[in-house]
Length: 247
Image (tube, rainbow, N blue to C red; front, side, top):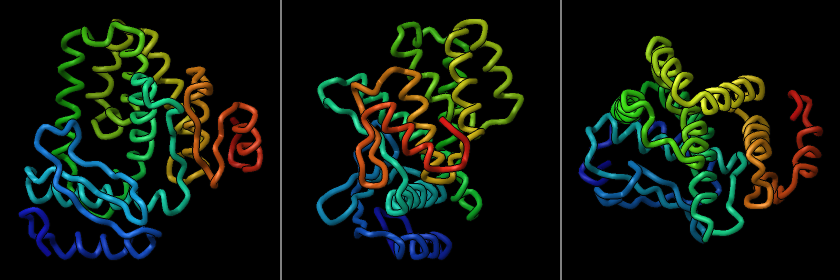
């Protein structure tokens, strides 16, 4: 099968077949322009889902990215929660919720495609290069409050795919330059370790904890089990119904 100039391997086709049969909507594909800010994206439409992907990647990276997005479609079909901004005009909230959802759900997606034998180092090396450059600059681009908040959430994913030595060096610089971000990241990571990100309820609790810690309930909500969770009280009700830890 050819897709945007890439001949998909048997492994990729096997992965796609295994997960697409679990979906509740048809998947369609679209080529993203080179200037698009992400390598890929998954969008919902009436009756189908669209996976957008940039074609200008090596074959191995293209396959890993494609299967990564297919796994996201599988997550939503299996009831994983989503975080939604209440007001699309509040650009900071929209960006923050997109990063929060994407980074947490990516943890599971990344693990899955690696276990299947895909190589996602092309994307992850670029993420690490950007993070390293940020560290070398003493996090000069993250001095405003919103930028620091976003960095704390982005580190959830950035630190997921680097060595402990690489992580330690950046954390040392982060603690010295932005101690508030350092502390916030550690709090988030402890909750992620506690709840786990491989299950819908685990991701739900991670989302709710971070939204609550950032006092964002008035500005966004979690869609989970066909309900919109807008308040801490509603979130606690769903969390208490599951025995895996507490909020």
